[in-house]
Length: 218
Image (cartoon, rainbow, N blue to C red; front, side, top):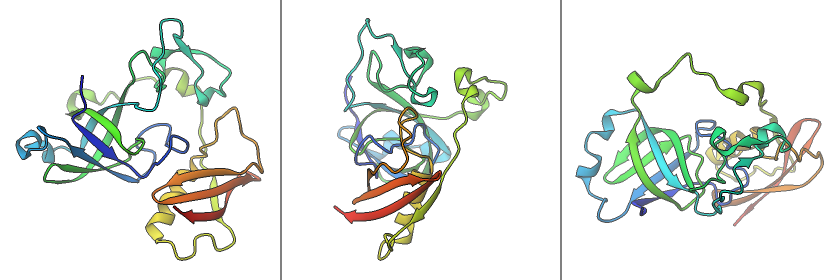
């Protein structure tokens, strides 16, 4: 198996990447590599609204036969589930699958929305989403049906959002509102840093609100 391209993403580290695709409107770009960077490879894809992205968790070590269960963060990190009942990146093969929205196809580059990819993620394959056969209204979500994620309000202190593009601020707000902290590590007043775009965003949680204290250009 070999990479057919790269995914350029605003997420420069694993921390703060959304837990699932489609949770934010942030955009990423898929760039095909030779010999797949030819227009005929994408002919017809522009007619679809969404695409399945198959990719490699390139900064995550694969598990072995002795590690067949994981502790999903959404369960607080203290309950185990079988690896095949989760979307954990720690898998026998480091393969990920995400459904994203196609915004634009420009030559052999694809602008997508809602990705949950680390920057420079290797691309393995693309497959169009087929709503006629893949949309299942009666589907159940297993243990995830018992969890409830609540978005937090994001506040910018000390003029930390000054002189930064409004679209960047909007994106930072979207990402942080998902509360990137691990479920088992919900300490308030602990300082965190998230590398998004070309910025290092410093923040903490006070009274169930996220306070951005500083944004440093990298």
